[in-house]
Image 1 (cartoon, helix red, strand yellow):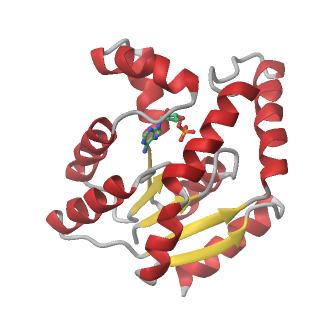
Image 2 (tube, rainbow, N blue to C red):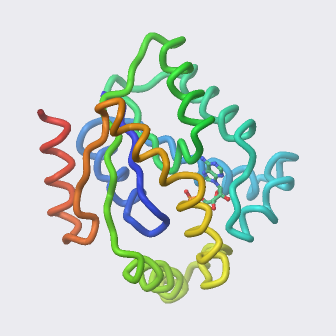
Amino acid sequence: MNIILLGPPGAGKGTQAQHLVETRNMVQLSTGDMLREARTSGTDMGNKVAAVMDAGELVTDEIVIGLIREKLEAGNKGGGFIFDGFPRTLMQAVALEKLLEETGQSLDAAIELRVRDEALVQRILNRAVEAVAAGGEARADDNEESLRTRLMEYYKKTAPLLGYYFAKEKLQRVDGLADIPVVQASISAILDK
Ligand code: AMP
């Protein structure tokens, strides 16, 4: 099974993806994680996108599509892929379809984690505080200003994908504000259908 987790920043896509990796042998493809890794290792691409990410803007389609292409060509462990934070634009969605087709695969569902906007801001700011309390570092883009930009980018460029996948009869919705195990169960029910 190949699925997309859709939803604004802070909706819980990463948390849910992690659970699917642990329970279903799926492979998580998070373009955000790949980009952060590229930054940490100081690759040319990582250095190039750093400022864009910190500001909360989207990096170019070309870069993220390139990252996903590499991973799709490398294959999965049999459990399928979870696309987390990708696609974020219509162009990425079309590119994904083509890449899946080229590798003999298809998309089973795009699952939207629905969360009220007011709850998102609080969640993200809490995530920053928790990261620091745990002795780590908060993400550079987990601050109120970047978050506003990330939300705006989501509504301008990513939210149209909800209509796109609805029209393709791939869209499923779950309540992202429910407790984590409840969200996990809702997603499981979709995957088991
Ligand atoms: P995330 O971890 O998914 O919240 O992504 C963190 C940041 O990485 C985003 O705010 C963007 O700057 C960049 N990014 C991640 N995925 C994408 C994508 N699919 N398209 C464009 N930019 C992305």
